[in-house]
Length: 58
Image 1: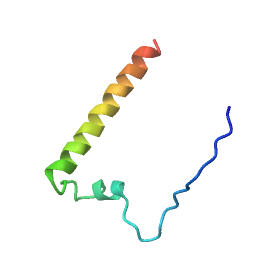
Image 2: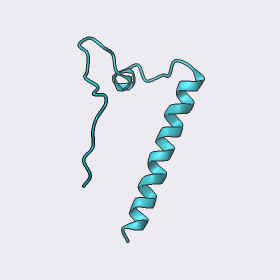
Image 3: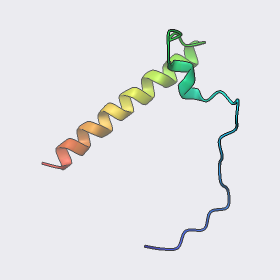
């Protein structure tokens, strides 16, 4: 394995509302059409990648 140098580290900030928190709980409706599209697109990509991973493992 090669040595990897990190130029930047991301730390969580107290009180910062993360994207996943927007979709937890009772408020499951997206704020706009772009957010809904991105959510559906990401979900579809995950399903497709999982299917290819299962097929590759056969």
